[in-house]
Image 1 (cartoon, rainbow, N blue to C red):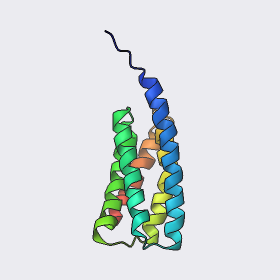
Image 2 (image 1 turned 90 degrees about the horizontal axis):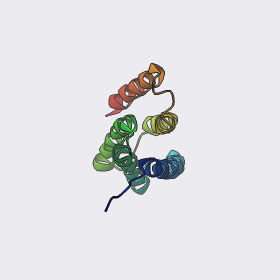
Image 3 (image 1 turned 180 degrees about the horizontal axis):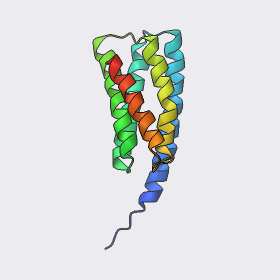
Length: 129
C-alpha cells in the first residue's frame, strides 16, 4: 500500500495556522502594552513562538524556525525570571511580526536583504537576553 503525502498541502495549512498565531501574538502584545506584568500573556507569547518554531521545522521553513527560536528564548527569560516584560521587548517583538510574515511567505529568499534584516534583528533580540 502506497501512501502519498502532499507536503504542499500541509505547508499551506501550516501557513494558515501561522497567520492565526500571528493574530494571537498581536492581541497579546496589545494587552501587554497596557499591562506588562501579565504572566498569562507572556506564556501565551512563548507558546506562540514555540509553535511557529516547531511548525517551521516540520514543514520546511528553516529561516522561520531559526528566527522564532530566538524570540522563544527571549520570552523564556521573562517567563522564568519574572512576570514583567519591558516595553522595549514588547516593541521589539511587535516589530518582529513583519519579518516573521516575510519568512513565512518566503519573500525574496534569494535576496540577501531579508537575511540581513533577520540577522540584524536577531542581534537586537540577543542584546535583550
